[in-house]
Length: 337
Ligand SMILES: [Zn+2]
Image (cartoon, rainbow, N blue to C red; front, side, top):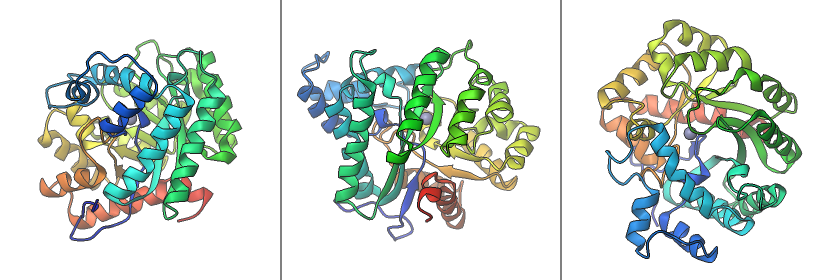
């Protein structure tokens, strides 16, 4: 396989925002599902591809519908052997397809343990084993795991995830996140203590917010959780004071163009252009990511190419985003780039 090129070159790329549940090639997911003996709703591989990808632009209408697709991929990845192979495959695949040499992968281990039936430590150590195997095969790649809390979990469950992140910090867990389906009952503020513990231990902090819905959520995140990075954060383009706060706190946004278009967080390319140009002109630090390349039928090279082809970013600006991704990576402090 010849990796896709950008500017007639094959630049080394960094991906900071990539969910394991959306990052595995459907053919590999099909194989894992069969290894696990999972009863799938159809015998047809093509129906399966349809089930686990956003196969056409009108397939999902919002973030909640997008999150429903993850139920299948997370179920299939819910065993030590399944998650080990998933992580192993995604790291090698990202390098071969796009020359991604710095990769942060995020997952919620509690959505991979069949609601407690599987042991969480087995799931996490299997993930780390999959990463180790891939990094042995591709020694020019560096990778780390981000453990995600969830907006639909009670505080006590999220506390267990932070405990695990602390326990496996020196083994390859590099950061924490809060993600999952939107939940009006969820309080970011209530998680300030957990986030503080992670920060004190040296873990990187990135939090999903400002993707769609209430802009107040992003304010709450900045005020009480003080992350180094925000997953998406595009809504700040509509709030001058929020832009100022993002800059004051030196936060880097993880922007995922195709994901935002497919979940309808962003209406169309014109709105995407408005958001990204606003952030550029206001000198907000941001990076370009896929969110989940296989589920969204994209990859990191295509994301950059889309922005360049549409005149949203110049080549120089795209290169600046690549450099910012390296700088903002939690791996940079483990082993400086
Ligand atoms: Zn995400």
